[in-house]
Image 1: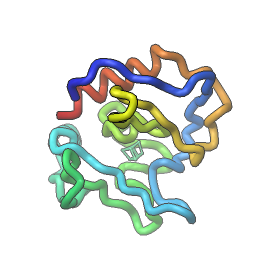
Image 2: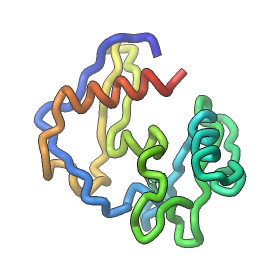
Image 3: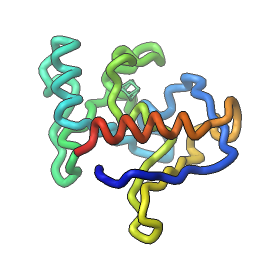
Length: 144
Ligand code: SF4
């Protein structure tokens, strides 16, 4: 990432209620929880689990090279009792949900969008520029 500014949705509110919806498949969606190589490495180091226990390699998703394994119920390997067991070191893709950041050639900058799949969009706390700045900083830190 080398562009320096972004735009974001105004007057949006959201507050995670830990429903766990974003941590697995839904009746309408197969979830792909993608991992950067350094994230898979860090999770492996911190949990003591070999990467192949909790993830599998995926082709053509650069810069993501792994995808989280899921339970037979379609939930993330690390979701237990509806709680993330690796919350402090959860992947960037989990930190971003329900937001997405893409470069827009037309606008010449990065653009944040969100998914209405998340039940707390437009409920809860206002999402401020500071919140989006933190996500933007994380993306710059993590992504090539
Ligand atoms: S790593 Fe944690 S936050 Fe991310 S999908 Fe798995 S359980 Fe959910």
